[in-house]
Amino acid sequence: MKLRSAALTDIGKVRSENEDRFLCEETLGIYGIADGIGGLPAGAEASSCAVAFIKAGIKSGVTDLNALTLATSEAVLELGQQLNPNYGIGTTLTFGLFKDGCVHLSHVGDSRAYLLRGDCFQALTEDHNVETEARHLRARGESSTKTTGSNGQALTRCIGQPGLPAVDLKVIPLLPGDRFFFATDGITRLVTDAELTQLLHTEDEPQKILQIIVHLALERGGYDNVTGVIVMVDEI
Image (cartoon, rainbow, N blue to C red):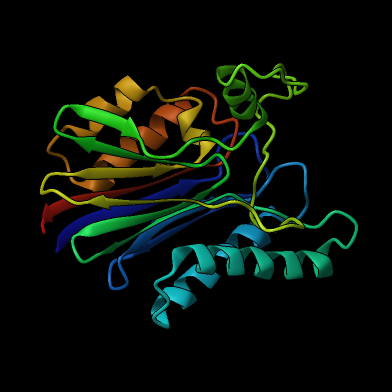
């Protein structure tokens, strides 16, 4: 495979610390992001632990992403018991392993992965939050006691809290021209899908596209840390 990639992160205009971390390891074929959970301490430590554990696992030859993601959650949980015994720590984790003509996705939390294929721009992940769970319940005709107002964005799954999270897994055969985009909510809440589609469609290099996307998020307030990873598939 021939891939081009880039990653970029910015602290934003409000936060005092950048708690986002990214994976952009061309030699290992792993790309993605982790976003330390707001409201809990040591978000940077949680996301750093997660990406380091994933990188080490892939480097050692692990191919079972479900098992690796669950082991990552246990590693972050153990670190949280040291750093914050009462409440622990946590992070989102969304990443892809590009291997043998496919991308193998693993996802927990509300960071996102997208695919632009031709003219079709689609989300490959679903936010694990109160709003999404309530919507699924309503779609099944079930009542929900969960609120979706100010609490709607509260996470229902993450890496590092007690109890192993359900991991969303997906395998997608790659096609030449595919463009993948991983982003934390510091981007997805401020830059629209239409804008992302237009930018990813350009012939610019991934680093240039990322700079524009991050600039847009900062220009619109930069209320959170801002992190993105782009992977372009040139050849299979």
